Image (cartoon, rainbow, N blue to C red; front, side, top):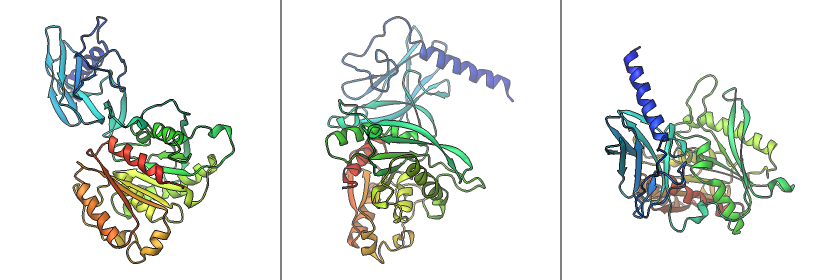
Amino acid sequence: MNTRLILSAMAAMLVAQGSMMAQGPRPEAMPAGSVAPVTNINQNSYPRLNKDNSVSFRLSAPDANKVQLDLGGKKYDMQKDANGVWTVTSDPQVPGFHYYSIIVDGYSFADPASESFYGCSRMSSAVEVPEAGCEDFENQDVPHGMVRTIYYWSKVENAWRPVMVYTPAGYENNKKKYPVVYIQHGGGEDHRGWMQQGRVAQIMDNLIAQGKAVPMIVVSANSNVRAANGGMAGGGYNWDGMQNFRNEMIDNVVPFIDKTFRTKADKKYRAMCGLSMGGGQSFYIGLRSPETFANVGVFSSGMFGGISGAAKLALDEEVPGIYSNTKAFNDGLDVFFMTCGEQDPRIQYTRDIVKEMQSKGVDVKFNSYPGDHEWQVWRKSFHEFAQYLFK
């Protein structure tokens, strides 16, 4: 092992972690009119959200030679002042949730000044840019449900695995049974994504309080599952690639939830939905398991095109009966809903496949929202989907 390289990395880490946390005892100068994003650790410190939705970042690293901000894949060179403080202001950002990292002398770190979230296959910092008219994504003065993390035994992995579960306000104080939504994350994320980045609890609390959604349980499982004897984790965009997670969901997660919570254990009171990779899982597993799910939501899936490796699908082969026995397919579903961001490279392919399905009589709803392949689009997708369910 290269000892010098290891020592260099450790030194860079100490510079980044130590000096980023040491924002200094002296008061910091803030850009005029700026506010702290909700994702800040310290609401009186940086990052700062400006009126034009640009974001200003600050880092004290006097011994660093080069510091960059990597915000959503775009790198910005930070400028150093005489006191060793590095600053930069980004371009204006679209509303929503943006991952970022700080690069100090070539080493990338999460910023201790912001909350960290699991996304992009690592713990990453993030900054939230609010959007007018999206108050349902925020905590409001309404009755609040509960989110808990519990563990179940997976016969697929032969291991204990986590699942996060939202129960609506009042669940603990009554004996009612509730419908269930099984909601799936995207690639590079896990069971925490929807409950943390996706704001599921806030969305459900507000919709239920407004009478726009029925009280329901929402279950977020980790679909990064690998069979104990090998096999694909998560699953590719084909039926064979979905089998490990299909077995996990149908044979492990659903029975565990029905046993542990007061559920309406019937397909009419179950939904499966997800974003990106989770949208593909919902399409295959949800639509090919009509005995388990009567409601399916597919958000921003790349399985129809717009990503590397995607090919045109023969849908009647992928979902037997969708075209050859459309009436039976429709009769087996209460809600089939698809969405995509309007700036997402998947959008035209999604519109085309929806148009094809509708031309053949498939009862599928569709909507699109401003935005790319990102959380604000997926929050809006779930917000709309939840209002259609179990009515």
